[in-house]
Length: 115
Length: 115
Image (cartoon, rainbow over all chains, first blue to last red):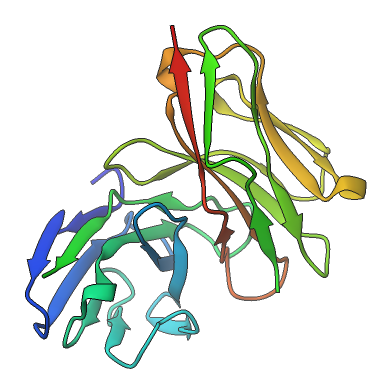
């Protein structure tokens, strides 16, 4: 596709359930980021991949959060035993390079609601 | 650690009036600075970026921003607001170090444009 694709667009989970959020980056993009955007807030960094290597996971809020990108393309963010505070929009972004002149392209996000 | 502060969570202007959205940054080293726009239920779109070249940066849709080191500011302006500019705007900062284009976002400013 032409842009970053995220699925599902909306996800409702009961507290304690596990969820998996998918990101299809732009083809050929090396870098991939996950951000969490709570209601009324700016996006907050979760984790960063360069190809299949997870180079930075300092933003993951707890060990219930896990991200992978096994073949250096599609990425999945998994949240185990969801809690109400996990309710947010999860944004994926990709870029062609690793430097600062390589702009980030964001997907439309997955809105997770934990009830 | 770097951070950005956006003054005013909501700004309202009349169509045709000047748009001024404020952003101040804090960084121990000269940062890279960005403005993104987010329309409802969409991801973020890059408006413009400062990466240590010219201090006055022009972006898309008639927006521009000026990097002022003495004031640690990177305010976003547009001479004449259009109804289509109504959206949420985020200022973001990154450091020219390893880790890819990892961004720290402000809390956002919601721009309302009135007739």
